[in-house]
Length: 273
Image 1: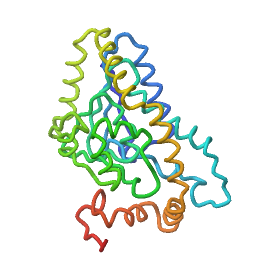
Image 2: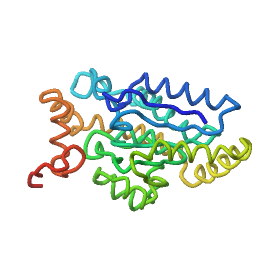
Image 3: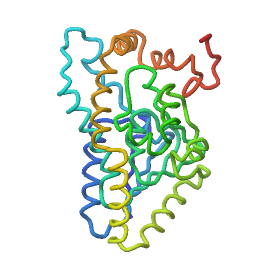
């Protein structure tokens, strides 16, 4: 078993170019190593991954009306992240993710590509940028895991999904107590690793081929890359960035989510819709 750990807990393991590059290198190394039969992805701290780091991802971005949006360059940029996350699905060895705390926005772009997802009871999933300024990079994983209607239900609203709800809908495999998450995920990885590597590879190739024909992952990702760029350059997207530049990202996100009363707004009085 190869354990990969997201290790920026103070930053809620937000996605950066460095994380992308290190994850890709680690997955490629695990793929090449004949001693590795299973990859276990986990994270330190109170969150698995709270999405893309907004500091670097918006630098010089949405609020600049003089900037000409180059769709091709944008697809190529976001594609470097989407293709790295897709490696969790594409490498020939099983991948398991152990999720605690927040796993939202870009965090779901990453983790929903894993073959199996186990979550602690504290885990919360969702794609709040669906409300403004983003779309998932791989829409097919939402449909594959939730079914078309439930995928629409949660991407039409960006609503939060608890670990228990995610498990009951098939978005993740199972939920366990937080203090058992690490041991449980490791036990599952070791159980999978009991199979010969050639058996595991055949199983994954076979099952992924079904998904390839049913969901067309490459086409789905390309549409996700394109529309994610569009969403960041609509008038509403540009207004959101400028508002964040005026009052700060935390307050802008709070304004966006306050009417829904979830994520960081859970427990706060909701304004009138």
